[in-house]
Length: 240
Ligand code: ATP
Ligand code: MG
Image (cartoon, rainbow, N blue to C red; front, side):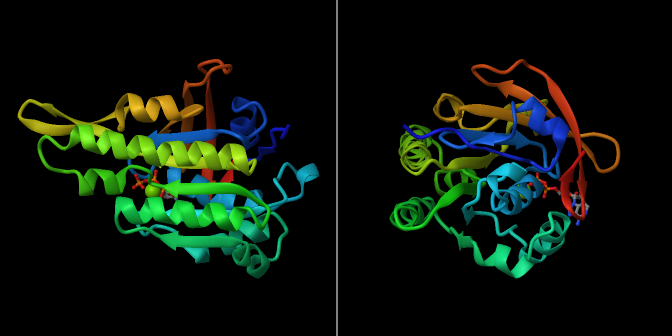
């Protein structure tokens, strides 16, 4: 049996909320309004996953699937330095791919599984898991098909997490509700419906606080209380 590894988020408060960090063998979903820190947390995890186990890392490589073009290698440098790691070595251990369609995204996952069979990966990031589905199935009457394809993709993510003892960190968007004739985004409603809700082991809701402060709330998790943690986005990544 594989045993769970917990990877630090960079914030002690957030780690405590999560029971030690984000877990391998499961899917952690983060959703929330724009600039709430979903992608910044992804960047921090890219580095912390490479820390040795005794430093609350995962001692493994990282795969990053980017559907929005928001990965910044330059951001990795100060985060690596903050953890006392060599930035070039850290960057070398991040396998990055930009996905342009939902099918492309799916095929990248198939290719990654082959790579993970050969090298020790501990983290797979998909930022965002749903953006391309919303673009590729934007027509009326396409929702059922979208949900079916989304379920297929999510089941691959579950399989990767379990087969390779990897932590999957995926970001999600919030839905826009028609209200008073205008579409207003609701920061408390994750997109993806029950298909996404069912796939995520832990669902985190992020929101903006004062200045660079952010708040993370456990939205849904089988064995964690519905508590909150406050963290900061800094040049060195996520911190208390
Ligand atoms: P979206 O829904 O648009 O993808 P997001 O939740 O992914 O949003 P992030 O990109 O993670 O949001 O967060 C962006 C915020 O992170 C910025 O508004 C800024 O406050 C903060 N930030 C980004 N880079 C730095 C940095 N180098 N130093 C400090 N804070 C930073
Ligand atoms: Mg983002």
